[in-house]
Amino acid sequence: MAGHSMTSSSSAPAGPQEEIFGFTKAQFVALLVMFAALVVAPFFLYPVFLMKLLCFAIFACAFNLLIGYVGLTSFGHAAYFGMGSYIAAHSAKVWGLSPELSILVGALLAGVQGAIFGWIAIRRQGIYFAMITLALAQLIYFFCLQAPFTGGEDGIQAVPRGHLFGVISLASDMTMYWFVAIIFVACFLLIHRIVHSPFGQVLKAIRENEARTTSLGYRTDDYKLVAFILSATLAGVAGGTKSLVFGIATLTDVHWSMSGEVLLMTLVGGLGTVFGPMIGAAVIVAMQNYLAEMGAWVTVIQGVIFIACVLAFRRGIVGEIANLLRVRL
Image (cartoon, rainbow, N blue to C red; front, side, top):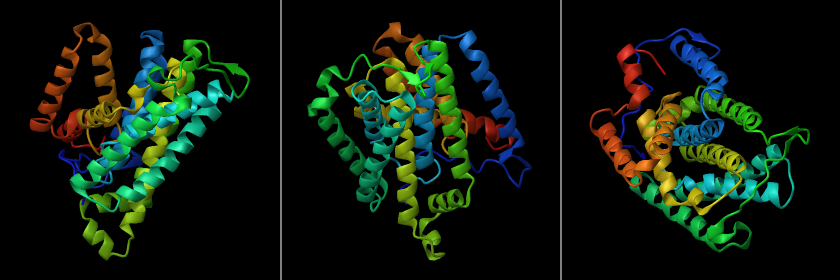
């Protein structure tokens, strides 16, 4: 099975725990804290920074669905994030679609792309799967570099935020923030539902022992492909939302380094945890934002954090906290 180098944190607690709306008590408390933070944060922090954080949190949660719950390490998720960004930007600027439709179109195309690439890659395991996803992502990068509609190295600029449902203007950063927050919550709850559904239980079984899962009669490749498509689609949602927030879609969104960033976010937060990718995204985005004056040293610091996580904090921030408290987060 395509393993990953970090220890999944989903098995931290021992024994069954009482659940509230599908969340354990610890998760439900964390959920309430998250909701409170989403409501309070824009009154204390710059809304554009928060929107960037939420977009990458969606991206990291989508990536975690694949690596944390299926055990598939993709090095090419920037392809779906970036394509969602380009298509949403093009839809809003050229076709004049409303923001929600632009994001939907970007997500759907990312999902179709994920279905094609997943069908190609899913038959391989381990490093071979990772390298195929990276190679396919590089194809998308060079396609975006040459395609007329992407604007090449300039990207698609001056993308209008438009009017939500054709009525509510998203020109205000605060209004746009609430729109992005709603998208984040919807994606977060959807991923939680997927993970804790019977389908999600099969994904976890594949992660733990694919051969045994196959012996029980499950067509594991089909399950992995569906998970890959879901992850790619949600990555497209993140990319499309980001392009509308900043009014631009660029090659940075499809560059291989973006795949590395989302991997780092997931590892730092905690693989196989519900809240880990969100925390990891917050740490990395905050570091990039507040340490920007240090220039290239930010990358060096990120590298040090990655090494520290691999060597000392294999469960990630949330995973270590969950293990310490003996709860599931």
